[in-house]
Length: 303
Length: 256
Image (cartoon, rainbow over all chains, first blue to last red; front, side, top):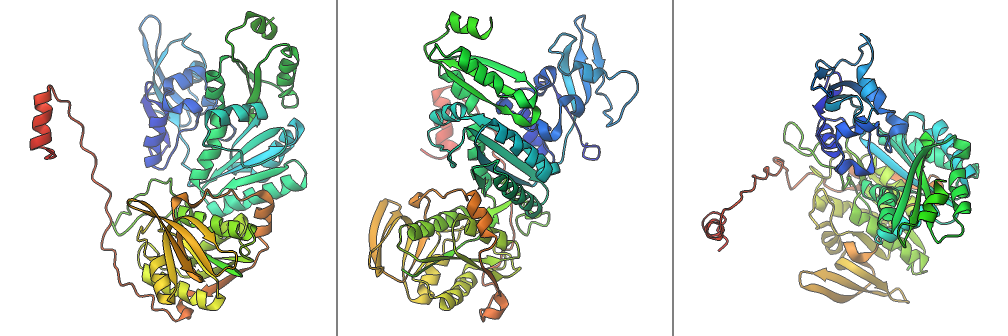
């Protein structure tokens, strides 16, 4: 419904397909993740998937306007019939289903509030000295980019290296520092957004938060930068046996978990990488053992 | 060489799925992401590399287009060009502004700037004419090497050697300078503009000229009468047997 901006679809629709359909009409999906080409919208809801645009569009609990689901005894409960943007009648059943992981029912239909597709997207790739600098960059991004900030992701060097090893056609266009930060802005006015991005970059450089940085001038180059960030997960998975942890931590301690893990695993030969949605205080910790599963490593990680 | 002039064009971003406007007169540009033409990016990169190697002293970027072409010029400055020239015109280059007019406008800029080398992209991804470089060379009476995959300028700056793409492979040509070169895909991989250069770019000189003032007839000799999207692909058909496949290849696809 192009007036309300609500998209209704079957739960089995693949996220990337929904996004493509919406873009034809000037809208886009309110979330994006690496698995967009294979994951289903119903699955996204059932797991309350976050993704890389959470910092802009928020949680699926906010975007979900209606849900149709089937309970264990076969009852079909339809809260997606006439999807209204505002509906305060009764309890928010759709919101209860989001993140319920199939424990309350199987989601069969979804109604989502979808945003207008931005016509201009800009990506910057930055090198930061330490995690404190990453946090300062995040604060500067919020201050200077505000409503046009659409993604802010960080990677440590092991994560970056894994992604580059798996995608040899890519390279890191910046040097120095222990972290990489990807900042994306999206809006309806390219000149306005570029101006904001440039002011943010100037402020970050002056504040010493950023050592080096580049800006992607075209969508093609922007996608190359995203491929580094999005390639980390698969790269780690394919390099051996990997322990993956998806955790939310207070921002000041976000990277501490990675340092602690590295310290405790010092006796083993492992690839420990930390990366994730720094704007959501969400860390992905990946520990990869090229030799395969090792019970001692497992025990050390999860005593 | 003292000066290299690089032509850059603002076009619909390469990754954008273009739409035909409602009246079918052209491609819908409103609300569409625009970027520097990919081959122009390669041209800029090559010019900057020449400067970094010490083969050129100054790189000047020029663009012909509306006010927003200045953003494209700023990108070129951010990559490392020293100066930029904006030839202002609101005539759309994918519609009324023809390659011949563009070549003639560039000729005027060349007369003004006296560069030793002009590098442009081999073609733009909106018009795909690939005629601007050869026409410019002809108007100037200069040598040309198009579809360049490798460029080497002689130490004395009097000549250049270019390996150019052909349908059968490549050929190497040697040409005296000044010359016009058009850049092809394999010439180089353009750099990302770096932070310090993006900041510096704002202060670099950008001169604006009016296309109408340059004494070139901008009236189109080519007119776009209509634009339509390609026909939708028909669904595929599964054949039941090899005989069926042969029959279809012979009688429907007419390929055997």
